Image (cartoon, rainbow, N blue to C red):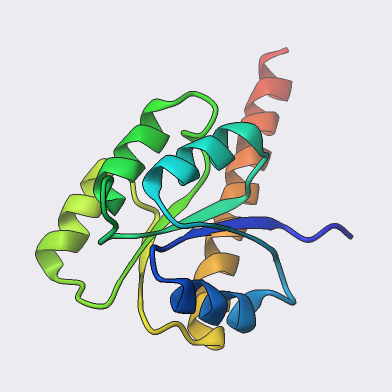
Length: 138
């Protein structure tokens, strides 16, 4: 079975390496160092999930999330926001913009795996519901 594709964006190479070590055996990890790279990679690849750092230069995680949700090619891909300093205000804003979940850094294998798996299962469930509705309509 082919590994699910997860794009992880962070401007800190050490964080990207930590993420690869944490979940790289379970998923095909693609990395990006900026929001602009996220947009380019997301438009050109069939991704299953995106994890984007809240605090990146040029384009922060909220701006990146907003652009992903506005693009018909990427709007259905679940986006998890990551940060070291998550607050309730940040989470409320993120959910209102379409974030699927949040994850704190530094990453741990168990937490990353559970959050990723939860979003992938929800995505599969949504696809099954849509297919079932379409079958009933015909």
